[in-house]
Amino acid sequence: MRMELIQPFINAADAVFAESLQGPTKIMDLSMDEDTYRRKGVAALITIKGEIEGRVILDLSPDVAVKVASQLAGTEMEASEQLVRETVCELANMVIGNSVTLLNDAGFRFKVFPPEVHMDQAGLTGSVDTEALVICIETPCGEIYLNIAMHYLRRRRQERDTAHALD
Amino acid sequence: MKQFAALLRKDNRPVRYLVVDDSVFARKNLIKMIEMFGGEVAGEAGDGLTAIAEYGRSKPDIVLMDITMPQMEGIEAVERIVRQHADARIVMVSSVGYQENILAALQKGAKHFVQKPVKPEVLYEILRYVLSDDPNATGVPVALAGESRS
Figure 1 (cartoon, rainbow over the protein chains, first blue to last red):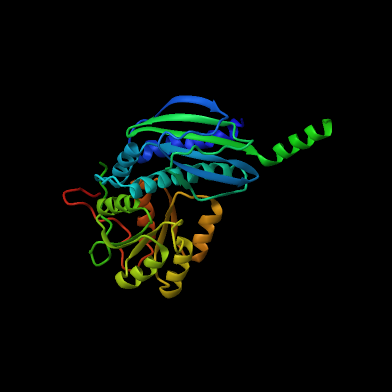
Figure 2: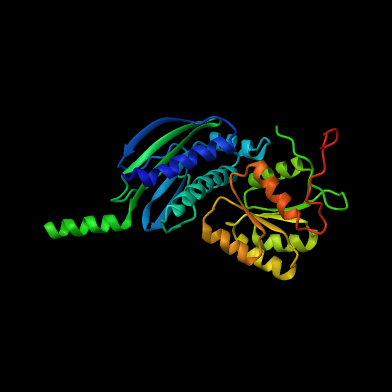
């Protein structure tokens, strides 16, 4: 787990939630997860590929999504599947956009793929590299979860090459 | 809520904005800020193609343009609007704040960039700056009714 790659996402999430939801945020829970991710609500999955690789899942309940949308719009929004999808994507884009800026400034080059929204019952399939940090952030609109798995591409390759050489 | 001195055109009329974003509530959020700045919404669009048509129809003073949108992305829409209307004033509003995107938008003719979540005070200063280059705008905010100016 590379905290230097994960910290920018935590910092960005904290700043984005506090600014856009106009209130204090608090990290309620922090845990490691190596299994298939089980969604709490509606999840946006963003894949990152390049010098650093991994994925970030932003996950919140539909009720929280509607509260977030209403707060962002400054007016009461009517609940709908479309609104929930839009909200999860917009929030994920803001968190990723802000963390990408921090990581780009640190000199990393990579490509960010558009968010994929998951609303079905299935869990999100992991991969060999998905040792992830799961964070629950309490916001004025309710709990928002982040599941972050990031690693250095080059370092992983070197580790694998070394392991093969020792076989 | 923080109060802002109204940003007006030189003819003392409200600045007219075209708001382009595929997210309805992101547009509502920007419109709320525009109203705080004493502006007027000339039009809205949810993608780049519609934005081009809306620009031609509404002839806004300022466009607030998202980058990532369906059908046509914001940077391509900027290029096409500026090609047809060399005096267009477009401010990019996006969560994707990395250098390549900002540079690409500026090279295509955007005047400025603001990262989401948008802070009203940041957007206000950017609009002030962009409008100061506009022959129709004062560039200097007009005081709110009852507000003293020194």
